[in-house]
Length: 294
Length: 179
Image (cartoon, rainbow over all chains, first blue to last red):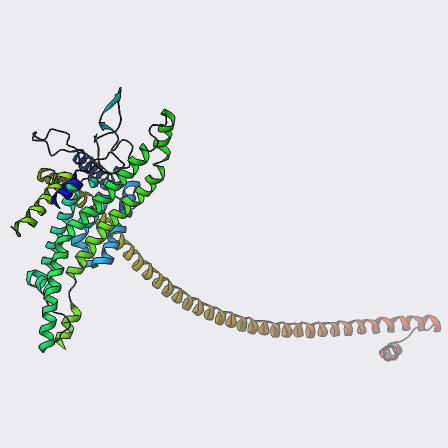
């Protein structure tokens, strides 16, 4: 079994030469070993966000200028979506995280589609300033690095936990997770309590596994997109200079549109799921309380 | 032995997973820190100001709507007031016109009566003057005619008429002229 897993782990990705991990820009022994190509792009994304936020909000007026208008459109749209899911009260607390998730993931995903990202880097030289494939690209979208997606997912999980405990308290969370629902009493009540205890254990497992599913879903989609585009770009290799050149332009073109959509969808999915998790755990069981009063 | 085997397999799989996807604490924390910096940047420079501006604009629109409603209400009230004033002015004007009309009619009637009276007086005076003049003329005619008859009689008869004859001829002539 272990030999099978290690054998599977050592297999290179199918079709494309894209590494499943981010390449370090410094040696592993260096103190800057954490600076990978995905960290570099994350810093660039951070710079873009900072630059545009400042540009949009520097001289704000009631009649907005172009940048302000664009950012207002995005923020208002996102805020209304978040309010629609988690409610007005939680939206005030959760929106900064959820808005950041959407914007950061979207920019990171789409950054990977820029020309040169994933294709300029280090590889086996084939001539002056040319390589057969960028085995260690200079730039790589952060969402194609599991370190980043896990980091984002864990951060979201911690904020979710904070908001949940703040809203319903530790005991409220325990009751919410393990407490029997339905208001049955007597023997049936005890049976239901045991069932809900078991359901609570499953619920805890599902909660713990959320960061894993969130991070691997995002990483998998973006990494797969990179692979598809690289594979399509290399499809016509070996058919001559012109064929290879045209193939590397025409063949991946439809997939760029698909990846634009995938990048947007993944940002929406990640943000939406986090919103739903927050909504599920911070909603008070008013119906149950009403039954208790009766 | 049976308990440790799955543990070793799981640990091996985890190591393989970590190795294959390049998971490392330093890289993980670097990404987390960058994400939280982006979070703080967006919160401070984007979400805060933009949501504040949206709220300000929403408040301004709500105020504008309220003002608009008040203006519409005031306009309706002003229209109602102006209509009442117009109605009152119209009624006053109608009343004044009627009064003026009545007054004009009364004056016209009085003037007419005065004119008629004045005309009657003039006519009476004229008649009296004409009568008096006629009488004077008649008297003068009679006298002249009597003298002419007396002259003609004395010339025809060759006789100097005395006072009695003349008086008698004059009376007869006057009587014939009067007839």
